[in-house]
Amino acid sequence: MAQVSDDTLAKTSIDAATEFVQSFYTALQSGRSTIGSFYAPTPTISKILFNGNVVADGPSVQEIFTNQMPAAHYEVQSYDCQIINLNYPGPAAAAEAAGKPLTGMAAARNMSLLVTVSGSVRFGEEREPGDLSNRGFSETFVLVPSGETGLKGRGKKHWLIQSQNFRLVV
Image (cartoon, rainbow, N blue to C red; front, top):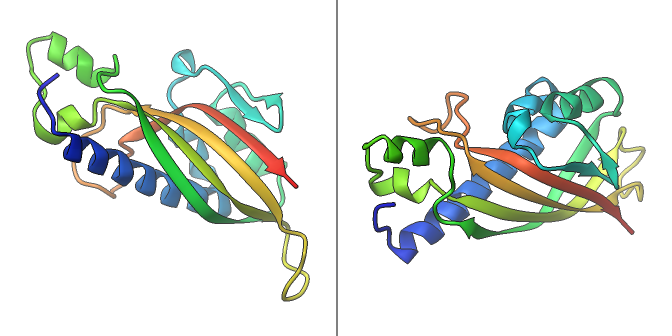
């Protein structure tokens, strides 16, 4: 891996977590048909858990949210991230092994991240202002680089979910 400063790594990981959290929870609320695209291909997924129940893969998560779950409103109250592996053995590492050394942001994006999120979720519609049907949740993700390059937006996801653990809390 090309030498990347600690500041660049920190900024890249924070930007990745922010972009991921904003887009993922928006999709859970209003873009459920896109949820499957947030997940790494099945062979690389280690576990997806929802309240202790194993879910097979990203398309299965999408099916649950599309066909079984009521409308939901997520309010993220906090999130944090930590770099797990600075040289993740993904698509960028394969390019580097093929003699195309990574530089700049490509090198900084060649990492895996642990992202923790907490907040509240309300399933169904709010009955009245101040409705107490909100439930707290805690969620942990392992994100890996997708290998996508190019401009932000335009449907490109730089980070994919490799592992996820969702838990409703008191």
